[in-house]
Image (tube, rainbow, N blue to C red; front, side, top):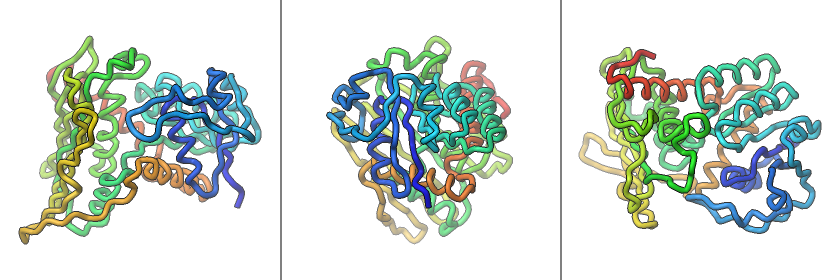
Length: 349
């Protein structure tokens, strides 16, 4: 079967992570990249930094076609898939252009900055008869992937609910993090991971109620209760930004099933990782077990996400985990939570 030819739009931290992850995927090959930075096109990625994975380095890009203008990448007839790793406010325009040019699209999360634009992207894919996949990597990452499989497999019975958290210190190095027209703040850039995972596990809520605080109209730190048609399904999430830099990141979950509770808690404190609770299954017999977790290397999670992209395009079968409609629903959940927080009321979805 033909190798899927990939063009990466944007060589920042996520563009670099995707480039490295594509090297681990069978049946696909990066053939072109686009960046406005001439140094990056020449292979000098030493300025790229992130909060996980390897640091940027001098890369051998021999054999790759390089473009300073995205329009040339999008219209390259030797590319099958455009991998959009640009800032969020650029996602929609580039994805729609790539679809119109006959390319499949993998777009980094969030799909867009508002759900109406996301819907336009989905319609563009339908009109072009091409796939729009959105790179929500969380279901492919270690503990979350294992939890998803346990819930979906039904081994421990029906899902009863759970609590999810994802909190960071104020990312002051990102000047436009709280700009709703460019990044979207903690709700759109951070919590959307858990909104997507909640939507995947539980279906779409009928309403949300969110409390917390705003920063210039943008959600800063908040807790949400998701209300479902089934009143026994109790789901909450806490996310956002704190002003203290000593704990730069924490995430985790407690997922309740009929015959087990799944727990996981991780943090970065003083630049040191702390696995406070490894993925643990608590059962009614008083036992606790710690299932094996795949992909200790975060790049393996991204490679699994990209392998799912290849499978979806090759088979023509939409990916349940990477679908544009699921990503749009996660974004809609974030919008409704912000509306609830700003209005101090329950908001229907």
